[in-house]
Image (tube, one colour):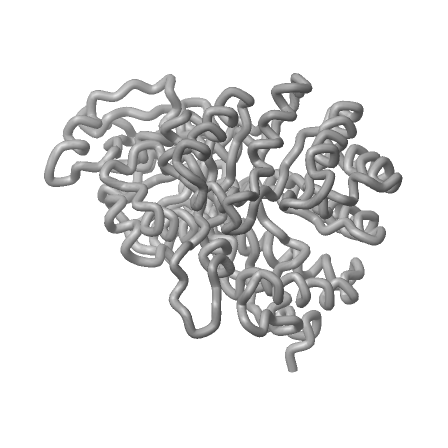
Length: 449
């Protein structure tokens, strides 16, 4: 297989064909499929949790999955992947499309969190529909080309911004229907929920079918503010998604308050918390106690490793000692649902990024030592974030849509060693155009000469 031959084959093939000699991440194979081929791949010299399989694609769905040990006797067109990896399409459950691509307009002068907030405040003056739409669309085009099928974005909603941003979001949701499942979360400081305007904000979120959220950090009245957010969500049947404890302050325990509030109120909706950096610097027993509460409350956590590494413990001229990435292995040990996401891309909070979940996964595995074994970690960019979004997606199984990402890499080692720019993305069994948008398209929008 090469990067051009497979798409050409797929464009010429009928609606019924086979992908031969694929390797599937075991964690991403539907539980209804049983395997005996895994043993040969989990043993040396491969020693990776992969399944050797042939995939039958018919009318946009996966019609059959059989082990490569079983002879493939068919007259249908077939393509030999030569042991290339096949993943389900990705889900990115924590992004900031409204901030994206503003780096050149309002960069972060020293890379600190405080400076990022100031740069964002300055940039807000540009956030008309005419400014938001092309930048948010640009981010979605990147996501789609990289193989993402679901995106949840947080939208800044202070000072009436919600009416503009949610309207743009709704337009994009309609335009991307059938390609990317889009969700939006309102983003305000938690003291906003002390104001009468919080009712109107919650009504706006409900009108657009969104998720209620806010930024949790230590401040007076935090417990009451979190409780009020739950109350507003309960009254409207909304889920909750918080930015929680995005700092290296061990006294920041908003995550704990969220779990206690959910348990006390018996809240039935989905609650997700992003970042949770302070867990990484808290005393072991205290952190474990919080993890147990998360498990009991059924709260999911999304880690944003690239952005947290960029901002946390940054001091000019000094190597960072603490990196802020939350306790990923420990969360898994407590059976807390954990996802990874791209977060900010090319704005004051993170100067880089391209909405590429393969990059997110690669960096997370290296940073968090999420290998030996790699286990279920592939689910953190596929099935788990899809579940957080309430979607049945991110798995490979018979009868599921043939929404797949095909790599030349034959192992996790090869996948995580080299940028996978030549991947082939299939949506309902057909190849899409994976050409990324040109940054120059936004020059006039962000003021680049």
